Structures are given as C-alpha cells and as structure tokens.
Figure 1 (cartoon, rainbow, N blue to C red):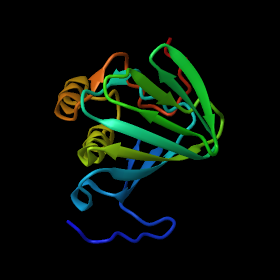
Figure 2 (cartoon, rainbow, N blue to C red):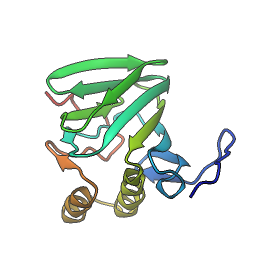
Figure 3 (cartoon, one colour):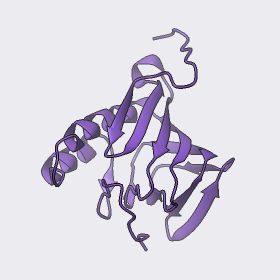
Length: 160
C-alpha cells in the first residue's frame, strides 16, 4: 500500500458479469479509503434494489445513460452526471438503453471491488446463477439484496 497507480485508457484487470465489463482502476489492496472501477454496462444490466450498511458509492457517467432508483425516487443519469449513495439508502442502477453505458464507480471502504471478482466467478458458469452462492457473497460484502439480482444482458422492467 502507499504506491501510486498509473493506468492508461483500456488498462486494468477486468471481469465480465455476463456481458457487463468491470475494469479495476484502483483496487482495494492499493488504497485505504476508496476503490475505483470503470464499467461498460450492457443494455439490460440491472443490479436490483439493494442496501449497504457501511459502503458508500459514487457513480460518474462517462457515456450513455443509467437509471437509478434511490429509495422511492427513480432518476436518469446521462453523460456527465454524478450520483452519490451513502450507507442505509436502498438503491439500484440499470442500463435501460439500447447501447452500453460507460461509467466510473468509486466505493468506500475499498473492499467492495472484490465482490465483483467473486460474483464474476459465480456467473461464469452457464445456466441460472447459484442463488445460494450469491446470497453468501452478498452477506460477505455488506449487500442486502431487496429485489432480484439481474445478471443477464436482457432488458428487465424497472423495479418499482
């Protein structure tokens, strides 16, 4: 810890969440306060409604548009938009558009980036995801899922 991280465009380890690419720009082992990931979310990607007890997240949309559910509010966030979600706020984000959405996601504390690595390992197997493995993963990484987790790149209706 304590070393600068320098990555050029397109650099960084990455994983696939069934068509959505997550690239790790600053990993939890490299930072004390926050990790940074770059996403290219496939059309139809949807996290489902969830909440964190400790984790806070900040999204910055680079290209395309994301839909956020923040408590009872649903908002669209286009290129240049920034959305911050503190702990204890139920939220979801999705790509409802027809093209991929590119964005940065900063997470504090930084350990949540490891969630995506482990989730990708679960999702790499064909067929329906292992719901018990995902439930254990959520519990391990401060995520209480309040609705179903959308893992396929097919459009899903907005959670209301």
